[in-house]
Length: 149
Image (cartoon, rainbow, N blue to C red; front, side, top):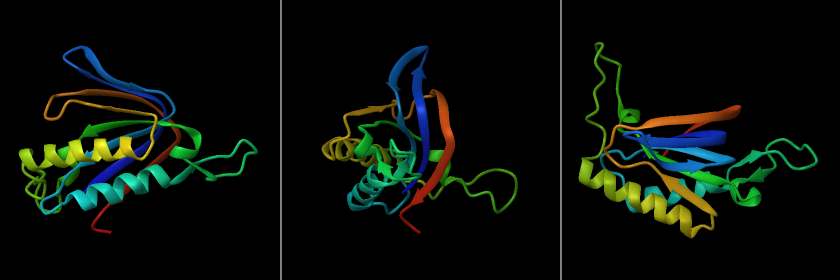
């Protein structure tokens, strides 16, 4: 499983001109389920993201507080293109991505687990849809989380 985490001031996702998810301060998580991923992988990355200390304390101490500490929001968007392999040629190879039914199952599980961790607001895109994602990156802070690493 791969997640591109972006710390944001706000983010939203639209499908066919309709806003289907919107958050304030927190994380935009672009999530890609890979072949062979399990619910345990999804659980581990949800817990990792929720616990990462990427927010400053009120006193200005850098990277002192987690998403859970600040009561931040999460917007999860499916992003199979994170599986893209561009080492050969000019066309990305997406065969490392999980099949759509398996990916949707893991995507849904990840969202449910993130909610179970106590994140106050967890929004999502629409799996398999063409989405327009908007964000105001905060920092910017962007990290790649990967179960393979």
